[in-house]
Image (cartoon, rainbow, N blue to C red; front, top):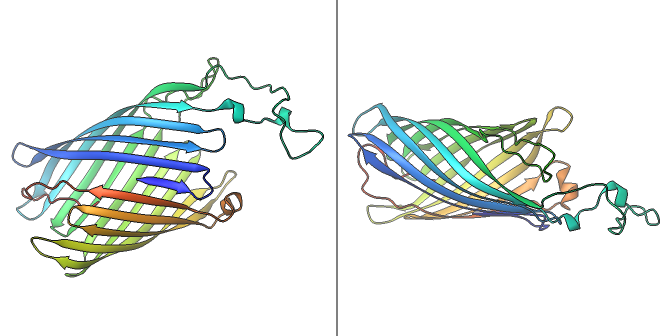
Length: 293
């Protein structure tokens, strides 16, 4: 998966893998791994993280068709942050002869004792999901990341702990007939003074569905709501998404349309995101079907 601002100010990539293993009569263990990174701005402020996750799914009720599960999980990761301080300009470096521009030759009062550092990151989560049938399910969960609040300072003297982040999410995949499904969803992020809410829905249209082949197309509309620096909230963007699925393959595309003052900084350019998905589906039994992420 990759996300890119058209102004080339922000580039993000991500790859992940997860798999479940049956244990006991109805339960599962799950393992996963994620690699992601981004680079921001002219200073090349970069973050790269690799993490491993594990989970245990306990069936709380159900039958041969329906199943209800409670899942507890945890993750551990290592990350690196780096910055090119030579590309930064500070208030003391503003040109007096040509206001509005910077002069790198002027002395800066800012001092950096390191331009990169490593840190560990821990997280935990809880999830409930219910399988109603092969084509309908719903879920809801909460996670807490940055449990250890790692230091983010580029100096040895300062201590700047990373705020813990709470993520709450819920969604469903509900069949409305043989050829139409609706997929509503909501996710909320709360980290220190920052708040963000993504909410919307997609519609999935089935083209072909039999025991040998499955094709579908999705079209969705989402909104991103965030808090202002001073007070209140605003709708930052509308997100248009599409996706095509063919058997175990999925190819998605989305585009953010800025609706806030951020569009002035990006010259009206939003961001676009590509995603490529492959579901490795084994035998579908025990009331848990291969997910359609």
